[in-house]
Amino acid sequence: MENLSNEQRTLDVLILAAGLGTRMRSNLAKVLHKLDGRPLINHVCLTATALAPRKIYVVIGHQGEDVTRAVFEELSEEHAAFVWQKEQLGTGHAVNSAREFLETADSTLLILSGDVPMIRAETLATLVQQHHNHRGKGAACTILTVKLDEPKGYGRIVRDDAGFFSRIVEQKDASEEEKLIKEVNSGIYCFNTKKLFSALSSVQNNNVQGEYYLTDVPALLREAGEDISLYQHTDAREVSGINNRAELADLERIISRRTISRMMSDYGVSFIDPKNTYVSESANIGRDTVIYPNVTIEGETIIGDGCTIRQGTRITNSRIGRNVEILDNCVITDSEISDNCTVGPFAHLRGKAKMEESAKVGNFVELKKTILGRGSKASHLTYLGDATIGEKTNIGAGTITCNYDGVNKHATIIEDNVKIGSDTMLVAPVRVGSGSVTGAGSVVTKDVPPDSLVAGVPATIKKNFKEAESETGRSESNTG
Ligand code: UD1
Ligand code: CA
Image (tube, protein in one colour):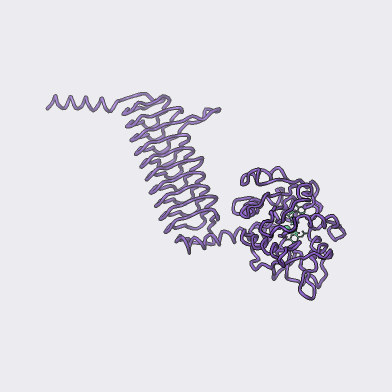
């Protein structure tokens, strides 16, 4: 089987994610901390899938159930498997937890760290390729390394006089001389799976931390006459590990800055104050849209061309059309706003709210799971929940859909060309027919037929516009 051509080798991935991450000083396991809105572990898993491995094994320990749940939000059960490491005795011990699944596998094992989230798939692909092509027969191990001006905290790559790999020494075990070495271990490696597990059996924990280091394996393999290859990468950011909150904040800023630069240069988006604006990498913004300071655009948000987003607004997982004006301090979550709408200031859209073309939502208006039809307006101080509102309807100031009876939520339907008077309470389930009007302060408890005026508490029908019209028509013709 060792004669398999290099290209044919099966790739498995193992991600180390069992540690608590003491230096985070957190109750949350480190790999569950979020970067660009997603847990660290999910960044790594998603990058790994781009290499189309046979399987991704995730070593879990601290809050393993939560880590599993997070991973399954992005990967299916056929792609990912979980391996428990109940006690965290070091990275070598972590890998050893997967022994029963991988020990006899005829594969290349790519090992990643759950706390190194910026690594790109292209870099990993090159690493795997170099590993397979090493001297025409493949290496036993290939280590992704990088040179750092400030290598403190990382394991150092010790080379022999000829420049070949000698061993990895951890920061805490390094001599003063070794601490000067700038080339560090990224914690990302390729191994011949069988050779890895064979050498792993000999790893001891006689080091400063009393841990079983995975980083001892390459030297053991070298001593056994195996080839160790080093792949020195140039982009240090890609392999920066997150060990504390300052490093997490650094990467968060790097990602957002990079995204904003790309949007300015490639998409033609204007940012008034790029340093004080946050945009997620998975968002998309159209040409000539202007983003004011302190705006946050999260998740898979799509914003069209020619929009204006004013100061202090947060938009999450939403879809905004073209020429939409969103004024200051709005919160928009999981919602959809069509072309030419205006929103805010101080508006709140959530739970799949939808504004159709040219609709308007004004200050202190909340829309939850509500469709506001084309050209309709809710300009002031209003709550619309579980409502479907037709076209060209006006919702007066202070209107409330009373959608919750304490147990269940109920729907309100308001048809086209309706005028809901100020301070109307719509006690759901209820329907207001097209062309109708509610008087100021009405409490509408029963369906309102089309073209009716209702008013009062509870509201009753005061007039039918169609009948009234035909009566005036008759009386007019009489006088005429
Ligand atoms: C490790 C490397 C170091 C390298 C650095 C790169 C070792 C001994 N050292 O150090 O050479 O420069 O990464 O970022 O490997 N983990 C487990 N189980 C354990 C211990 C750790 O799953 O028992 C996981 C952690 O959750 C983490 C990863 O392994 O995702 C790395 O562990 P960490 O303690 O952060 O190692 P470093 O000290 O950063
Ligand atoms: Ca680390």
